[in-house]
Image 1 (cartoon, rainbow, N blue to C red):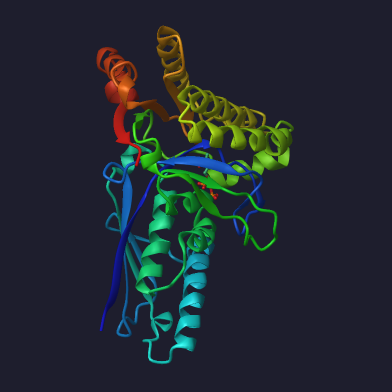
Image 2: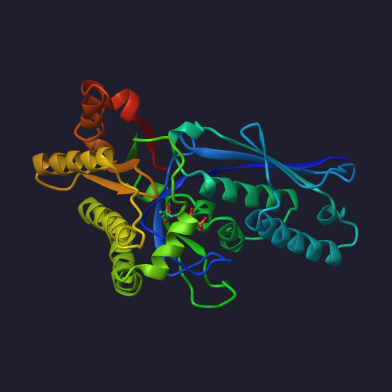
Length: 346
Ligand code: DP6
């Protein structure tokens, strides 16, 4: 027989960035973070998990049609934790099939091109964990699953929820209090939109995992970011979301992105994720906000040069419209240097 379950998980883009680990094995962070979940119709991973006693070939993972290595510590940690939970169920109910003993077959597809240059590990691990949890019929809550997805990739824990999502850094050594939580559902602030400016589809030259380790080890700015700047912003950002205060949301987002990239520059050797096109995007946002006389657009950058610009639907023309006009008009932007991908938050 064949047992099977499918699920999807959305991409999330942090507005308060996770950067630094206090435990690199469990992906326990040095600061809390907060993200906006992007619409699943635009950006998501779809994953099917299956298992069968007849499978003699061992665990396998196929992403966008290509076979992936499953022997890595992160994937193994997710498999191990989920199997242990299934084993508990099987031990308590003897009539359950022993799925925990069968090899797992995972098949994943992203609905956005890898060429979009978006980190897909967050949606990928979130979907993998939830698909296996469904397959195993685990009674686990999204909070429980966020602890497992975190071990796959830190930011993945935030993709177990929709809307506005926090990740509590926690203080325990075993990570039991380092979990994701929903700040507000998407319906709370439904007119939030994001436009993604794809500056480069190339794989980042310094991975987040190694970049943040070097930052923790060498940056002198890092300590105050983790202990003072971010805790204060986490409070302010949650209030901005509660109040649907876009000016506060936008300002904190931009400042936190800048603070994160400042610690990257303060890392030795320095890490440069932003390039000239990224900086041009920042200037465009600045000029959009200057024309509006208030903050109606907010940029944020992860570990790469691509910009995500948040705005409210009512400002579509003045924000996304301006980006599209610039991309369309400037020779070189649209094709070789950047292309816009639109996404609604959900
Ligand atoms: C800049 O979650 O990719 O996007 O835990 O090592 O897998 P690992 O790192 P990852 O780091 C994401 C860093 C970031 C900020 C964020 O998403 O909060």
